[in-house]
Amino acid sequence: MLPVWVLVLGTVVVSGAGSVDALYGTRAERAEVAASMTANSSLRSLYGPVFGDSTGALVAWRFGVFAAVLAAVMSLVVVVRHTREEEETGRQEMLSAAVVGRRAPLTAALLAALAGNTAIALAVTAGLAGRGAGSALALGLAIGLTGTVFATAAAVAAQLTESARSAKGLTAAVLGAAFVLRAAGDAGRADGGSVLTWLSPIGWAENVRAFAGDRWWVLPLPVAATLVQGLAAYALAGRRDVGMGFLPARPGPARGRIATAGGLAWRLQRGSLAGWTLGFLVAGTVFGGMVEGAADLVGENERAREVFTRMGGAQALTDAFVSALAGLFGMVAALYAVGSVLRLHGEETSQRAEPVLANAVGRLRWAAGHLVVAFAGSALLLCAAGLGMHLSYGRDFGAVMGAVAVQLPAVWLLGALAVLLHGAVPRAAVAAWGAAGLSVAIGWVGPALDLPRAVLDLSPFGHLPKLPGAAMAWQPVLVLLAGAALLVAAGLAGLRRRDLVTA
Image: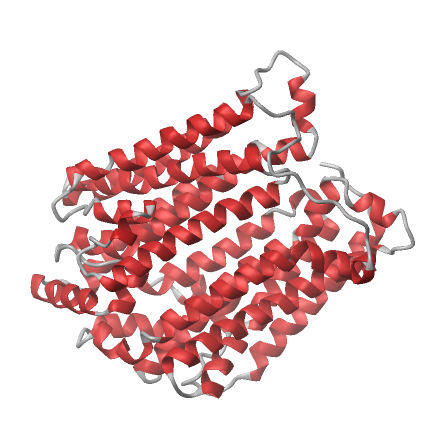
């Protein structure tokens, strides 16, 4: 998966330069948008302040923070996958029986993450070198080093916990806290100099100020954090047994509702759902505060207006902005739905499903518990986002909730595809992430890059009505819902007929 991460991240950042040139072709237009972005505290909390009015500075502002976050996500997934997940499945114990050092798996995982982040840094540098080689290198290093910081954070989490799920959750919580610190600091100050911003590794990447002065002296901060966390991970790895952690799990008897298959699924996924719901509520509140300033966001720039109308329809700009935000929430909710469905795959491959199914529990009842959490949970996430948008937007509760609710058929279709792959072709179940990722990529960068309609239609979100401004169209909604139902039925039928997999 590393080449896919590198390709997507590199393409998004590099292609952003062309989008900025198309949107703001003159220095006066760039200066105007830079001033308006910096004056808006909500936009600063989302993207950070703008430190210059060149094309490169706007690219660093628009894509730098999110590229750094995605590099961090890539790194934590890679490190946990090749450390704690290997131990959890028992593969590491088999490898350790050979002449393999105690810290060799950790070293291999960190080298893989380092290779991925180095490739991202090189891709960004090469793609933007024509706009200033030194500044392009500064931006590439800022993004790549943020990834290495969270790679070593994931390495520490993998030593502390006893499951891959807990390690990912702990590192994701640290990443979320870093984003919130940076957002809070940037909302309060327009120069990136807040103490809260400097407490965040994401804030360090922002304060490199690529294409706007290139603060090279900031880069030793993520280097030092990487070294300190890496040394801590190595020290912890030498002081525990394979499969064990410093924060042991708390097993207990199955009492009350947890004694059922549905109760077990809820117990396993409730923490994750609570975290996602809180995140959607906060994000909805932040984004909702930007709705009134949508007109100021694009000013008189017709090209920018065209991008928003492609994302949200041809209606009034404010409605288009609400629709675009609802679509983004839908695409992220699809990632939750796919991950929640694939929890079935994780339970199966880790051999935890076999003891459950050995009792008087049918496969369909076992799967149904996780599917209810996945599909109802994704609906809850969108409701939380809609509620947050309404609270900060201040009006049109029905219109805002309708805009997010109409995203559900596309979310459920992608979740249903994960059900089909797990049930019929379990060894290819991870391909569901590819489908969800493709939909996110098309929805995120497709309108800005003015991709052909045929490409935009590859995403199920491209077929939904653009509420609240457009008229409701029931046909695509019903077609997507029917497709989701058929995929779920086919996936469950395949699950009933096949053998369980163990790896």
